[in-house]
Length: 137
Length: 234
Image (tube, rainbow over all chains, first blue to last red; front, side, top):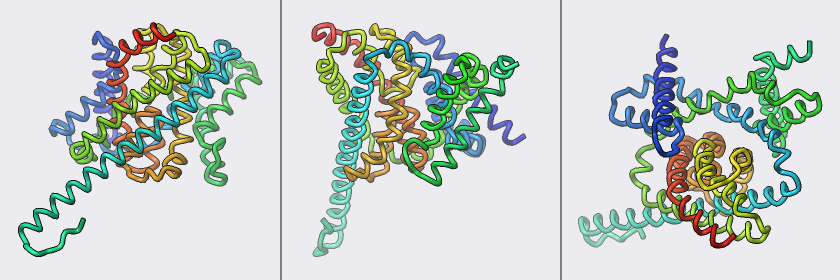
């Protein structure tokens, strides 16, 4: 029963998301709307974490298998791919790898810069509080 | 008899589970690319269907019941998002700028490669939304004149590729920060990248799930500008 209730909440948000996606004029997928709504519900404590946590974590931890049918659907596109398939393949490999590398490096750099700045500010505060103490950075 | 069997609801469900589990076992023993459970299951099932002549629609009788779990699983990412909200609050500048610059960079690289291969306008429009989640990508591709079914295939391939190239790229470039890893996977290879991020850790998973949304929004906003740009260039 406990798990059924958890499924109920998750399916309810899935359905509300799908419904809003249907009536919304811009193309936003229902799953994304549902995620945002469930996040708001959890964040503002309309729903408690324990009411969805167990089933929700089970779903996300096993997410990869859910994509198998969508991947198999690739075979229905083999005819369009024709003789440009290798060019598309190269394009996808280049753009995807570069994007992951670029975003990873930029976010890491910006985050570390902020961490250093925070540490520096903290150290300065300590410095003015305890005079004569050496700064860490 | 054989068609009765292949159109049976449980055929698609069974083969999906069978090859995914087999891939998981093989990958544990030999952790190489082709035994990645998702890659292994997809390739094995495509080979199985093509050699036996079973239609994709037959397989999908059961397959759709596995596919339908993508939505609740995506919704459930909200749990990880809430649990790791402190990271978003603290690093929103880094995350948002990373994604916005990333989408611009991705578009730039795509245009250069497309010019190199002499792709037409239609193909560029098909490829442009490739990094975002299928449901949004379909809408974007359609609105800027791409080939929708091909966009779906490319989005899936991008996702598979992201799960494969992600970890080696992180190792090579020393990207070891969990927030950076999550954002990179989510923005570069959507929900499939997120499935990989979940294996890497909770922070990666939450950041990746969040990045799917943010990247989708940036791509939707950018689409009309890219369309007019492409019309001039191609």
